[in-house]
Length: 91
Image (tube, rainbow, N blue to C red; front, side, top):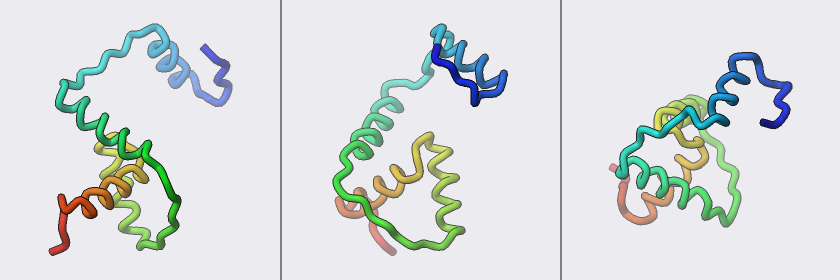
């Protein structure tokens, strides 16, 4: 285990437990496939953009991304990709 002086004792215990292999994924194949797709789309970075949006909207996106277990930037990218592919539309 690397030195992690910035971690508190509880975080260090969790990291040690992880290093010992005491954590096992309970995702089934369907869930794993979904997250693999998210990763695939988030790894296909080509261009950076800056956008302005209401802080309230950004906070809601961050909450939804946290629920899904993905970075909020990946969620935004996924939504844009789905819109471009016609999988989601505007009302």
